[in-house]
Image (cartoon, rainbow over all chains, first blue to last red; front, side, top):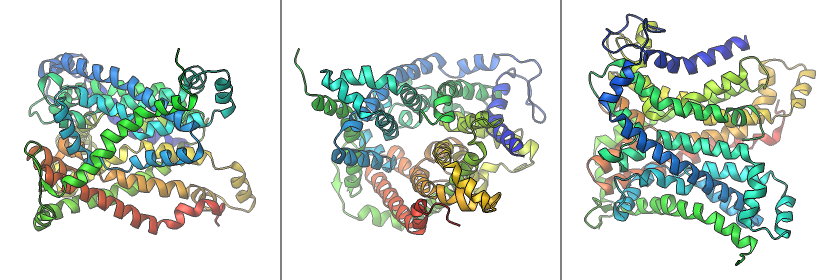
Length: 263
Length: 295
C-alpha cells in the first residue's frame, strides 16, 4: 500500500518531465500526435536544431554560464564566511544577527524591485550581467547563511579554540579546520545558489532584458509567448533549461534528502 | 606579516554578507516604503504626494480584483503546500523503505526546475487539444483551461503546489527527529494508524507546521509573477492578476514607480497582518511541541 503510494509520488512528480524529455525527441514537421505519445516513433534531435534557429541559443547559454560561474562561488563564499563567523560570535551578538538574517526571509521580493532598479540604473549596470550576479553578494538567499551557520555550530568549539591558540587567523581556521568538516553543507549551498541563478527569470526580466545580456531562462521563456512554435521545440527548450538544475539536485540529493548529517 | 586579531577576522568574514543584505535588501525595503508616498518615474526627482497614491488606488476596481486574485491563490496554495509537504514527509521519511529515496528525490524535482521550464511544461499540460489533461482526463476539452477564471487560477496554484520541496524537506527533518520511543509507548497503550498520527506525529510536528505555514504565507504572497506572466498574463479578465503582477505592471510597464512602491508596501503590510492573524489562530500549534503525546 505504502509502496504503491510512493510509486504514485514518483510517477506524478517525474512523469511530466519524462514526457517532455521524450517529446523533445519528436521530429520537427510531423503532425501533432493523436493522444498521449510516450515515445515518438523515430526519435531525433531536430527539435534542438530548430531551437537553435528560433533563439540565439549559444549566446543565451554563454551568458547563463557566465552568471553561474561567477555567482555560485561568490554566494557560497559569502554564505560560508557569514555562517562561520556567526557560529563563533558571542551569544548576544549572534542571537541578534541570526534573528535579523531569519527576518530577511520575510521581506517580500516585490518590495525590492523598484529600488534595485533605481540602484542598478544609477550605478550604470542596468542591462549588464551585474544585476544577475548581484544577489550572490547577499548570499543569494539568507537561507544559505542559516544553513552554513547551523553546520558550523555543530562543530565542537574546542576545534576553533585549538586553532586560535596555535595562532591561526580566522580565515585560516575556516579554510583548514571548518570547511573540510562541513563539505556536505557547502555543496548543498552551492546547489541552492546554482538552482537560483541558473533559473533566474525574474531579475533578467527586470534588469537585463537587452539582446546582448539575455540569459537562457528569458530566451527560453519567450518561446511560451511565440505563436506557432512547434511543441517539440518548446519541449527541447524546457529540457535545456531543466537538465542542469536536475543534475544539481542529484549531486546533493544524498546529503540533502537522505541523511540528517548535511542539512 | 601584519596580524589581525581572530575576532576582527571573524567580523571581516561576516562583513560581505551584512553589506550585501544592507545594500540589496534592507535599504531597498526602506526606500520602497518612502517611494510609496511619492510620484516617481526613476528619472525626474520623486515628488512627495502623501496618501494620494493610496486614495487613487483604492478608488479603482483593479486593486480590488487583484486582492481577490491574491486571496484565491493564497487560500488554496498555502494549505495545499503545507499539507502536501506533510503527506510526502510521512510517506517518504523512512531511510531504507522501498522507493522512499527515489520518492524524496522525485518530490523535489519540480522545486528546482527553472520557472520558464515549468511554464513551458504546464502550457503543454493544460493545452486543450493535445495536453495530457485534455487527452487523458478530458478536463478542459473544448474551452481552453487558461481562459476559464478558475481554470487559470487553479493552474497557477498547481504550479506552486508541485514546488513544495522546501516545506517537504523541513517537515521531513522534523519527522525524523521525533523519538521512536514515543511511538512505542503509544502502541503499548493501544494506539494504531490514525491514532498514532493524532497522538504522536501531529503534536510533535505542530510547531514546525505552524512556522511553515507562516513562511509559506509570505512566500505565496510573492511567487506568482513569473508563472502568471508566462501562462495567463494576469487573465482572464484579471482573475490571476495578483498583487506582485500589479506591482510589476505599474512599475516596469508603466514606469509609475510611486504606484508600484505603494502596492509593494501594501503587499508587505498585508503579509504582516495575515501572519499575525494566522499566529493567533494557530497559537496553540506553535507551542504544542511541549505537550509531547497530546492525546
